[in-house]
Length: 317
Image (tube, rainbow, N blue to C red; front, side):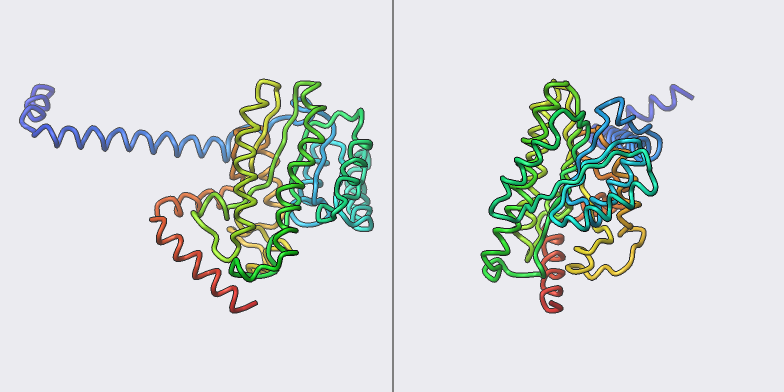
């Protein structure tokens, strides 16, 4: 039998054998990628965040959507919370809701309006409030986008400056505020919330400035991951696609949650489980399937598709 196979191989043209070998290598590679995805998504044990990083978590944009859901999930994991947002009444309401479910959770609230020209005053207040606290996890969630789809020349100056200030400066300022304490104790986790608009698809027409700020978040995360991993600090960009929030309801007309547009609670539960694993993560598994399908398509086709979506949303708004 073996000699028959060997004789058969000898009679095959070299290019056929080469193609067979390449096909086998490709199959093996894809199989490893698939098995790794299964392990990461469904089998890997989440880290004990308190033991790995510290007992406090700071979450920006914590009164709505993903940020609020992160706060609940982290409280369920036993972490104390520092909730940061611009609306004091909403902060107090969220704090009360969390403590009703987790009576032992310590909660601090800090008012910072990241769109304000005096945001540095809020950052100084943050520095005072976190002094001496064992901040182990930072969730840079605060972010804004366009009120509706717009061509670049149509975007009002106040709108685009606000997007840059909140998405770019907000994440940068908070990270620079929290990072020194993590360096001193040589451990910590920083999670920056990116977007599929700058990673999964090659372009995001009619939301160009928003997509550009999220590309900054992605690159910042990768660089900081390399800069500070030797300090025991894990920096990660988490990449959601659509999640059923007020923002997506407004700009993408997503009115109810679904398999591919989960509730903030479902998304945050998956997201917390991936903290500390890799510099970039797409925590919610149906989103990663969408990313896979997108990666199989030619970029010009994706560009045309995203442009058509943007134009359609512009008409509706």
